[in-house]
Image 1 (tube, rainbow, N blue to C red):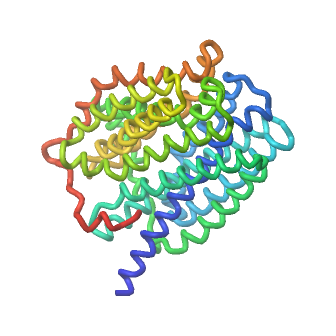
Image 2: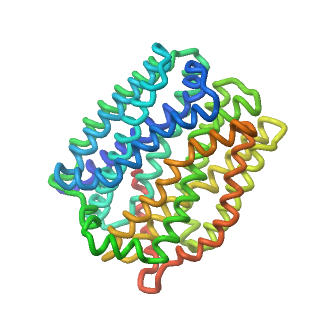
Image 3: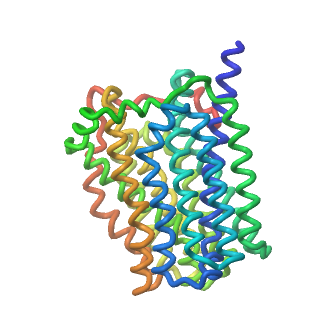
Length: 405
């Protein structure tokens, strides 16, 4: 009984960590328009600045698994969260008080590196909890991350509307994220180490890089990460500039997107079980393409927000289902997931500057049309995610729906 209680505490602790990680990132994204105005940046310059956050996250990927293997998931998550919190404080002060873009870039790099490291380690702990529970709860943890982004977007919109300085807002969020994570990891399972370390073994990893299916899944994840990341990075700015709404309304548009992502991830497992990966992915990708197009060309704000909602629902399943497809065969999962993550995260590295430079030419709002232009040809990649015959998807037990991971 005591072991069961500890397992439930670990589950709840992991859920809190996922939520706080989403809160940290969304809090910055919601205040991007304020930072842009404070620094006086053009779209291309802003894109290059946000490259620092993506670079930090991408560079964390090959390092975080090894660190978690040596230090354990709890210490890695706590240290990463504290680093990301320090980055939030620096980015806020550098933008709002100093008006110094290079220092903002340093803060963004710290946010990205901390959040990326935390993402790897918290997924390791989540997998360990899932194995101990003996039932599928991983989607619930990712839903908790989405709920964190909803909270971050909502608080960001409220702070912008109330005129709260960006440095004050982000400092408060940093205290909540850093302190909350340090407390939450105390309930993690004792002695859990990163299973991801096995992915680093030379032969398996090199072989995975030569597998056509793995590489196709990686390209698919790249497109879907770009679809999601473009909205995270640019939606608020695009609405402020293109639809001429207030900064608070721009932050609210981002909130609509992450709320739609959360709903989609919550109910998406039901759709996947009923209709299978291929049909659901084809349908949701078309929704994302249509939604992004409507968000750009809508002549009223309600219609544009409806497009954003469709975009969010359509983008919500691509990344997690791609990771699941990479892990279909348990014995090869670590190496394949590592390859797919590296390929997929390239979108977060290249996406912000690409959209920003395009925005300099056609405006940030019209630049969002790059999303449907990439999604449509990517529909041809979906068959690569078909489960192998020996690895049919496991149906989530009904009782798992009660876990709020």
